[in-house]
Amino acid sequence: MKKVILIIFLLPIVQVFGQKDTIIDYTYYSFIIQDSPSQLFTMRQINQSYLSGYRLLAKELYSVSKNDNVAYLIQTGLQAVFFLPFTHEEGHRSILTVNNIGSVSQPYFNKYGAAYVKGVTDQTLQNLRDNDLPTYIRLHSGGLESDYMLTNRMETIGSFEDDNFKNYSVEYLFRKIGILQYYLSGLFGFNIKLKEEENELERDIVGYDTYGAARHLYRPDMDFYRYTKYSDLTSNEKKYVHRMGYRSLLNLLNPLLIGKSNFKVSENLKINVGMGYTMAPFGDFIDENIWVKYNNLNIHGYARQYQNRENWFHGFGITLHNFPVHKRIYTNLAGHFWNQPSNYAFNTTESFNGGAIDVDLKYFFFNNRDKWLNAFSIDLGLIYKTEGFLPEELYFNKHFGLRIGTTFRL
Image (cartoon, rainbow, N blue to C red; front, top):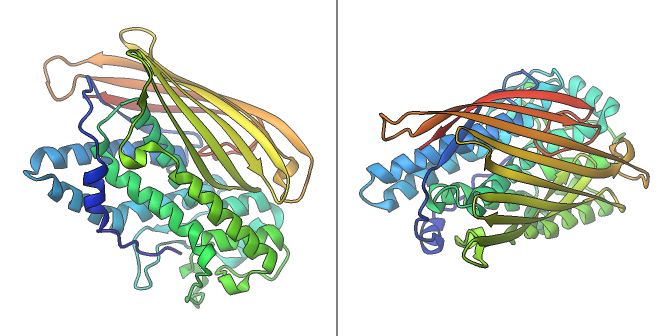
Protein backbone atom coordinates (compact mmCIF):
# COMPACT_ATOMS: atom_id res chain seq x y z
CA MET A 1 0.00 0.00 0.00
CA LYS A 2 1.26 3.45 -0.80
CA LYS A 3 0.29 7.03 0.06
CA VAL A 4 0.40 9.94 -2.34
CA ILE A 5 3.18 12.26 -1.14
CA LEU A 6 2.15 15.89 -1.38
CA ILE A 7 5.51 17.61 -1.62
CA ILE A 8 5.05 20.37 -4.15
CA PHE A 9 6.46 22.57 -1.39
CA LEU A 10 9.85 20.94 -2.02
CA LEU A 11 10.27 22.97 -5.19
CA PRO A 12 11.82 26.01 -3.48
CA ILE A 13 13.88 23.73 -1.21
CA VAL A 14 15.44 22.02 -4.22
CA GLN A 15 16.31 25.40 -5.69
CA VAL A 16 17.89 26.64 -2.48
CA PHE A 17 19.88 23.47 -1.86
CA GLY A 18 20.90 22.87 -5.47
CA GLN A 19 24.54 23.76 -5.95
CA LYS A 20 25.90 25.43 -9.06
CA ASP A 21 26.49 23.19 -12.03
CA THR A 22 29.68 21.18 -11.73
CA ILE A 23 32.01 21.43 -14.73
CA ILE A 24 31.84 17.93 -16.22
CA ASP A 25 33.74 16.81 -19.31
CA TYR A 26 31.40 13.91 -20.10
CA THR A 27 28.33 12.35 -18.55
CA TYR A 28 27.67 8.58 -18.71
CA TYR A 29 24.22 7.00 -19.00
CA SER A 30 24.23 3.21 -18.62
CA PHE A 31 21.38 0.86 -19.56
CA ILE A 32 21.11 -2.89 -18.95
CA ILE A 33 19.55 -4.67 -21.92
CA GLN A 34 19.70 -8.21 -20.56
CA ASP A 35 20.34 -9.27 -16.96
CA SER A 36 20.37 -12.52 -15.04
CA PRO A 37 17.86 -14.07 -14.54
CA SER A 38 16.56 -13.42 -18.06
CA GLN A 39 12.96 -13.00 -16.91
CA LEU A 40 11.34 -9.65 -17.61
CA PHE A 41 13.38 -7.02 -15.69
CA THR A 42 15.54 -7.48 -12.61
CA MET A 43 15.73 -4.97 -9.77
CA ARG A 44 19.23 -3.89 -10.84
CA GLN A 45 18.14 -3.60 -14.47
CA ILE A 46 15.16 -1.39 -13.63
CA ASN A 47 17.14 0.83 -11.24
CA GLN A 48 20.14 1.44 -13.47
CA SER A 49 18.18 1.93 -16.68
CA TYR A 50 15.48 4.05 -15.03
CA LEU A 51 17.98 6.39 -13.36
CA SER A 52 19.92 6.91 -16.60
CA GLY A 53 16.68 7.60 -18.47
CA TYR A 54 15.47 9.97 -15.76
CA ARG A 55 18.70 11.98 -15.80
CA LEU A 56 18.51 12.30 -19.60
CA LEU A 57 14.90 13.46 -19.33
CA ALA A 58 15.74 16.05 -16.67
CA LYS A 59 18.69 17.33 -18.69
CA GLU A 60 16.50 17.82 -21.75
CA LEU A 61 13.76 19.49 -19.70
CA TYR A 62 16.23 22.09 -18.47
CA SER A 63 17.62 22.62 -21.96
CA VAL A 64 14.20 23.36 -23.51
CA SER A 65 12.69 25.26 -20.56
CA LYS A 66 13.28 28.98 -20.34
CA ASN A 67 12.80 28.78 -16.57
CA ASP A 68 14.12 25.99 -14.34
CA ASN A 69 10.91 26.22 -12.29
CA VAL A 70 8.98 24.68 -15.17
CA ALA A 71 11.38 21.72 -15.34
CA TYR A 72 11.18 21.28 -11.56
CA LEU A 73 7.37 21.29 -11.62
CA ILE A 74 7.16 18.76 -14.47
CA GLN A 75 9.53 16.41 -12.61
CA THR A 76 7.58 16.87 -9.39
CA GLY A 77 4.35 15.90 -11.11
CA LEU A 78 5.90 12.87 -12.80
CA GLN A 79 7.46 11.71 -9.54
CA ALA A 80 4.28 12.02 -7.49
CA VAL A 81 2.02 10.40 -10.07
CA PHE A 82 4.15 7.76 -11.74
CA PHE A 83 7.93 7.46 -11.31
CA LEU A 84 8.08 6.87 -7.55
CA PRO A 85 5.45 4.10 -7.43
CA PHE A 86 6.69 2.59 -10.72
CA THR A 87 10.18 1.65 -9.53
CA HIS A 88 8.96 0.77 -6.01
CA GLU A 89 6.40 -1.69 -7.37
CA GLU A 90 8.95 -3.11 -9.80
CA GLY A 91 11.13 -3.90 -6.80
CA HIS A 92 8.30 -6.01 -5.36
CA ARG A 93 7.48 -7.57 -8.72
CA SER A 94 11.09 -8.64 -9.36
CA ILE A 95 11.07 -10.83 -6.23
CA LEU A 96 8.00 -12.68 -7.52
CA THR A 97 9.41 -13.06 -11.03
CA VAL A 98 12.69 -14.64 -9.97
CA ASN A 99 10.64 -17.19 -8.04
CA ASN A 100 8.54 -17.97 -11.14
CA ILE A 101 5.40 -16.38 -9.72
CA GLY A 102 3.42 -14.39 -12.25
CA SER A 103 1.97 -11.02 -11.23
CA VAL A 104 0.65 -7.73 -12.57
CA SER A 105 2.27 -4.43 -11.62
CA GLN A 106 -0.19 -1.55 -11.23
CA PRO A 107 2.23 1.33 -10.66
CA TYR A 108 -0.32 4.11 -10.43
CA PHE A 109 -2.41 5.28 -7.53
CA ASN A 110 -6.00 4.11 -7.28
CA LYS A 111 -8.83 6.01 -5.56
CA TYR A 112 -7.42 4.99 -2.17
CA GLY A 113 -4.01 6.45 -2.96
CA ALA A 114 -2.43 3.01 -3.33
CA ALA A 115 -0.33 1.35 -6.05
CA TYR A 116 -0.31 -2.44 -6.24
CA VAL A 117 1.43 -5.52 -7.48
CA LYS A 118 -1.50 -7.92 -7.84
CA GLY A 119 -2.65 -11.04 -9.66
CA VAL A 120 -1.37 -13.58 -7.10
CA THR A 121 -3.61 -15.97 -5.16
CA ASP A 122 -3.65 -16.24 -1.39
CA GLN A 123 -2.64 -19.89 -1.60
CA THR A 124 0.46 -19.05 -3.66
CA LEU A 125 1.55 -16.41 -1.16
CA GLN A 126 0.83 -18.61 1.84
CA ASN A 127 2.85 -21.45 0.32
CA LEU A 128 5.74 -19.04 -0.19
CA ARG A 129 5.49 -17.88 3.42
CA ASP A 130 5.30 -21.40 4.83
CA ASN A 131 8.11 -22.85 2.70
CA ASP A 132 10.46 -19.91 2.11
CA LEU A 133 9.99 -17.23 4.78
CA PRO A 134 13.10 -15.14 3.86
CA THR A 135 11.81 -14.70 0.31
CA TYR A 136 8.35 -13.87 1.63
CA ILE A 137 9.84 -11.21 3.92
CA ARG A 138 11.86 -9.85 0.99
CA LEU A 139 8.61 -9.67 -0.96
CA HIS A 140 7.60 -7.03 1.60
CA SER A 141 10.95 -5.21 1.65
CA GLY A 142 11.75 -5.40 -2.08
CA GLY A 143 10.19 -2.02 -2.90
CA LEU A 144 12.13 -0.25 -0.17
CA GLU A 145 15.29 -2.17 -1.11
CA SER A 146 14.91 -0.80 -4.64
CA ASP A 147 14.30 2.74 -3.35
CA TYR A 148 17.35 2.51 -1.10
CA MET A 149 19.65 1.32 -3.86
CA LEU A 150 18.46 4.11 -6.14
CA THR A 151 19.47 6.70 -3.55
CA ASN A 152 22.80 4.91 -3.13
CA ARG A 153 23.39 5.13 -6.89
CA MET A 154 22.62 8.86 -6.87
CA GLU A 155 24.96 9.44 -3.92
CA THR A 156 27.71 7.73 -5.90
CA ILE A 157 26.97 9.90 -8.94
CA GLY A 158 27.09 13.01 -6.77
CA SER A 159 30.21 12.06 -4.82
CA PHE A 160 32.17 11.38 -8.01
CA GLU A 161 30.71 14.43 -9.81
CA ASP A 162 29.39 12.28 -12.65
CA ASP A 163 26.42 14.58 -13.29
CA ASN A 164 25.05 17.95 -12.22
CA PHE A 165 22.94 17.67 -9.07
CA LYS A 166 19.92 19.42 -10.54
CA ASN A 167 19.54 16.60 -13.09
CA TYR A 168 18.57 14.17 -10.32
CA SER A 169 17.81 16.39 -7.30
CA VAL A 170 14.01 16.03 -7.57
CA GLU A 171 14.28 12.23 -7.91
CA TYR A 172 16.72 12.08 -4.99
CA LEU A 173 14.57 14.14 -2.62
CA PHE A 174 11.35 12.33 -3.55
CA ARG A 175 13.04 8.97 -3.09
CA LYS A 176 14.38 9.90 0.36
CA ILE A 177 11.00 11.18 1.49
CA GLY A 178 9.28 8.09 0.09
CA ILE A 179 11.56 5.85 2.15
CA LEU A 180 11.04 7.88 5.32
CA GLN A 181 7.27 7.93 4.81
CA TYR A 182 7.15 4.15 5.13
CA TYR A 183 9.44 3.78 8.10
CA LEU A 184 8.34 6.81 10.12
CA SER A 185 4.64 5.98 9.82
CA GLY A 186 5.16 3.28 12.46
CA LEU A 187 6.28 5.88 14.99
CA PHE A 188 2.90 7.58 14.71
CA GLY A 189 0.77 4.45 14.72
CA PHE A 190 -0.52 5.07 11.21
CA ASN A 191 -3.40 2.66 10.53
CA ILE A 192 -4.39 1.51 7.05
CA LYS A 193 -8.13 2.00 6.41
CA LEU A 194 -8.45 -0.49 3.57
CA LYS A 195 -10.08 -3.91 3.53
CA GLU A 196 -8.88 -6.77 1.39
CA GLU A 197 -10.72 -6.83 -1.92
CA GLU A 198 -13.25 -9.63 -2.42
CA ASN A 199 -11.39 -10.84 -5.51
CA GLU A 200 -8.03 -12.08 -4.22
CA LEU A 201 -6.40 -11.39 -7.59
CA GLU A 202 -7.19 -7.68 -7.12
CA ARG A 203 -5.37 -7.50 -3.76
CA ASP A 204 -1.94 -6.03 -3.26
CA ILE A 205 0.55 -8.84 -2.68
CA VAL A 206 1.71 -7.78 0.81
CA GLY A 207 -0.17 -4.69 1.98
CA TYR A 208 1.78 -2.14 4.00
CA ASP A 209 5.43 -3.20 3.66
CA THR A 210 6.88 -2.53 7.09
CA TYR A 211 3.91 -3.73 9.18
CA GLY A 212 3.53 -6.92 7.17
CA ALA A 213 7.24 -7.72 7.41
CA ALA A 214 7.28 -7.16 11.19
CA ARG A 215 4.21 -9.34 11.79
CA HIS A 216 5.55 -12.25 9.77
CA LEU A 217 9.04 -12.07 11.25
CA TYR A 218 7.57 -12.53 14.71
CA ARG A 219 4.58 -14.74 13.88
CA PRO A 220 5.17 -16.60 10.61
CA ASP A 221 2.67 -19.33 11.51
CA MET A 222 -0.35 -17.17 12.27
CA ASP A 223 -3.51 -17.17 10.15
CA PHE A 224 -2.78 -15.80 6.70
CA TYR A 225 -3.98 -12.41 5.53
CA ARG A 226 -2.25 -9.66 3.57
CA TYR A 227 -3.21 -6.23 4.86
CA THR A 228 -1.61 -5.65 8.25
CA LYS A 229 -2.76 -2.65 10.27
CA TYR A 230 -0.76 -1.06 13.07
CA SER A 231 -3.43 -2.21 15.52
CA ASP A 232 -2.81 -5.82 14.40
CA LEU A 233 0.74 -5.75 15.74
CA THR A 234 1.81 -7.10 19.12
CA SER A 235 3.79 -4.92 21.52
CA ASN A 236 7.07 -6.54 20.39
CA GLU A 237 6.17 -6.01 16.75
CA LYS A 238 5.35 -2.37 17.42
CA LYS A 239 8.73 -1.95 19.11
CA TYR A 240 10.35 -3.46 16.05
CA VAL A 241 8.46 -1.07 13.75
CA HIS A 242 9.62 1.79 15.99
CA ARG A 243 13.20 0.51 15.66
CA MET A 244 12.87 0.70 11.89
CA GLY A 245 11.43 4.19 12.13
CA TYR A 246 14.23 5.61 14.25
CA ARG A 247 16.96 3.92 12.25
CA SER A 248 15.51 5.18 8.97
CA LEU A 249 16.59 8.68 10.00
CA LEU A 250 20.14 7.57 9.21
CA ASN A 251 19.15 7.99 5.56
CA LEU A 252 19.23 11.75 6.15
CA LEU A 253 22.95 11.66 6.93
CA ASN A 254 24.37 12.53 3.54
CA PRO A 255 25.55 16.00 2.41
CA LEU A 256 23.91 15.47 -0.98
CA LEU A 257 20.57 16.25 0.67
CA ILE A 258 21.68 19.89 0.75
CA GLY A 259 23.33 19.70 -2.66
CA LYS A 260 26.86 19.14 -1.34
CA SER A 261 28.49 16.43 -3.47
CA ASN A 262 31.78 16.07 -1.64
CA PHE A 263 34.48 17.82 0.36
CA LYS A 264 37.71 19.04 -1.19
CA VAL A 265 40.68 17.82 0.86
CA SER A 266 43.41 18.86 -1.59
CA GLU A 267 43.77 19.84 -5.22
CA ASN A 268 43.48 16.22 -6.33
CA LEU A 269 41.47 14.63 -3.51
CA LYS A 270 37.76 14.88 -2.71
CA ILE A 271 35.84 12.79 -0.15
CA ASN A 272 32.21 12.27 0.79
CA VAL A 273 30.65 10.20 3.59
CA GLY A 274 27.10 9.14 4.40
CA MET A 275 24.92 6.56 6.10
CA GLY A 276 21.91 4.50 5.11
CA TYR A 277 19.34 2.04 6.42
CA THR A 278 16.73 -0.37 5.10
CA MET A 279 15.17 -3.79 5.68
CA ALA A 280 16.72 -7.19 4.93
CA PRO A 281 15.03 -10.61 4.51
CA PHE A 282 15.94 -11.48 8.12
CA GLY A 283 15.73 -8.05 9.73
CA ASP A 284 17.53 -4.88 8.67
CA PHE A 285 20.94 -3.34 8.05
CA ILE A 286 22.88 -0.10 8.49
CA ASP A 287 25.53 1.20 6.06
CA GLU A 288 28.43 3.60 6.54
CA ASN A 289 29.65 4.81 3.16
CA ILE A 290 32.76 6.62 2.01
CA TRP A 291 33.45 7.89 -1.50
CA VAL A 292 37.01 8.88 -2.44
CA LYS A 293 37.78 10.77 -5.65
CA TYR A 294 41.49 11.07 -6.39
CA ASN A 295 42.21 12.37 -9.91
CA ASN A 296 40.53 9.78 -12.18
CA LEU A 297 40.43 7.15 -9.42
CA ASN A 298 36.94 6.82 -7.88
CA ILE A 299 36.49 4.39 -4.98
CA HIS A 300 33.34 3.65 -2.98
CA GLY A 301 33.66 1.66 0.23
CA TYR A 302 31.07 0.66 2.80
CA ALA A 303 30.82 -1.09 6.15
CA ARG A 304 27.52 -2.83 6.88
CA GLN A 305 25.90 -4.05 10.09
CA TYR A 306 23.07 -6.57 9.74
CA GLN A 307 20.70 -7.37 12.57
CA ASN A 308 17.98 -9.97 12.95
CA ARG A 309 15.86 -9.85 16.09
CA GLU A 310 18.68 -9.18 18.56
CA ASN A 311 21.97 -10.34 17.04
CA TRP A 312 24.42 -8.34 14.96
CA PHE A 313 26.35 -9.51 11.91
CA HIS A 314 28.75 -7.63 9.65
CA GLY A 315 29.78 -6.99 6.08
CA PHE A 316 31.78 -4.63 3.91
CA GLY A 317 32.50 -3.89 0.27
CA ILE A 318 34.59 -1.78 -2.07
CA THR A 319 34.03 -0.63 -5.66
CA LEU A 320 36.38 0.85 -8.24
CA HIS A 321 34.07 3.09 -10.24
CA ASN A 322 34.31 3.84 -13.99
CA PHE A 323 38.07 3.37 -14.20
CA PRO A 324 39.75 3.95 -17.62
CA VAL A 325 41.82 0.82 -18.28
CA HIS A 326 42.37 2.06 -21.84
CA LYS A 327 41.08 4.90 -24.01
CA ARG A 328 38.27 2.62 -25.17
CA ILE A 329 37.86 0.35 -22.13
CA TYR A 330 36.35 1.37 -18.79
CA THR A 331 35.55 -0.87 -15.86
CA ASN A 332 33.62 -1.08 -12.61
CA LEU A 333 35.06 -3.64 -10.20
CA ALA A 334 33.30 -4.46 -6.91
CA GLY A 335 33.95 -6.88 -4.08
CA HIS A 336 31.55 -7.71 -1.23
CA PHE A 337 31.87 -9.74 1.97
CA TRP A 338 29.15 -10.63 4.46
CA ASN A 339 28.45 -12.52 7.64
CA GLN A 340 24.70 -13.24 7.88
CA PRO A 341 22.36 -15.30 10.09
CA SER A 342 22.15 -18.98 9.20
CA ASN A 343 19.12 -19.77 7.02
CA TYR A 344 18.34 -16.02 7.14
CA ALA A 345 16.59 -16.71 10.43
CA PHE A 346 15.18 -13.91 12.57
CA ASN A 347 16.03 -15.46 15.95
CA THR A 348 19.29 -17.37 15.42
CA THR A 349 22.72 -16.53 16.80
CA GLU A 350 24.48 -18.75 14.24
CA SER A 351 25.90 -17.29 11.04
CA PHE A 352 27.70 -18.01 7.78
CA ASN A 353 30.19 -16.07 5.65
CA GLY A 354 29.93 -15.25 1.97
CA GLY A 355 30.88 -12.78 -0.69
CA ALA A 356 30.63 -11.64 -4.29
CA ILE A 357 32.76 -10.25 -7.12
CA ASP A 358 31.06 -8.01 -9.67
CA VAL A 359 32.77 -6.74 -12.85
CA ASP A 360 31.56 -4.40 -15.61
CA LEU A 361 33.60 -3.89 -18.79
CA LYS A 362 32.65 -1.15 -21.25
CA TYR A 363 34.16 -0.98 -24.75
CA PHE A 364 33.58 2.44 -26.35
CA PHE A 365 33.03 3.35 -29.96
CA PHE A 366 33.63 7.04 -30.64
CA ASN A 367 31.30 9.21 -32.67
CA ASN A 368 33.02 12.48 -33.51
CA ARG A 369 30.49 13.51 -36.14
CA ASP A 370 27.63 14.03 -33.69
CA LYS A 371 28.18 16.68 -31.03
CA TRP A 372 25.30 15.29 -28.91
CA LEU A 373 26.75 11.80 -28.59
CA ASN A 374 30.49 11.62 -27.97
CA ALA A 375 30.66 7.82 -27.70
CA PHE A 376 28.69 4.69 -26.88
CA SER A 377 29.79 1.36 -25.50
CA ILE A 378 28.90 -2.29 -25.44
CA ASP A 379 28.88 -3.39 -21.79
CA LEU A 380 29.49 -6.83 -20.36
CA GLY A 381 28.80 -7.51 -16.69
CA LEU A 382 29.69 -10.58 -14.67
CA ILE A 383 28.85 -11.44 -11.07
CA TYR A 384 29.83 -14.41 -8.99
CA LYS A 385 28.36 -14.71 -5.52
CA THR A 386 28.21 -17.34 -2.84
CA GLU A 387 25.20 -18.02 -0.60
CA GLY A 388 23.87 -14.78 0.89
CA PHE A 389 21.72 -11.67 0.55
CA LEU A 390 23.12 -8.85 -1.57
CA PRO A 391 20.89 -5.83 -2.29
CA GLU A 392 19.61 -5.72 -5.90
CA GLU A 393 20.89 -9.27 -6.52
CA LEU A 394 17.77 -11.45 -6.69
CA TYR A 395 19.32 -14.84 -5.92
CA PHE A 396 20.05 -15.92 -2.35
CA ASN A 397 21.86 -19.05 -3.53
CA LYS A 398 25.31 -19.38 -5.06
CA HIS A 399 25.06 -17.77 -8.47
CA PHE A 400 27.04 -16.82 -11.57
CA GLY A 401 25.32 -14.13 -13.61
CA LEU A 402 25.86 -12.37 -16.91
CA ARG A 403 24.45 -9.06 -18.10
CA ILE A 404 24.71 -7.08 -21.33
CA GLY A 405 24.08 -3.39 -21.78
CA THR A 406 25.17 -0.14 -23.35
CA THR A 407 26.45 3.24 -22.13
CA PHE A 408 26.04 6.60 -23.86
CA ARG A 409 28.70 9.22 -23.25
CA LEU A 410 27.45 12.76 -23.78
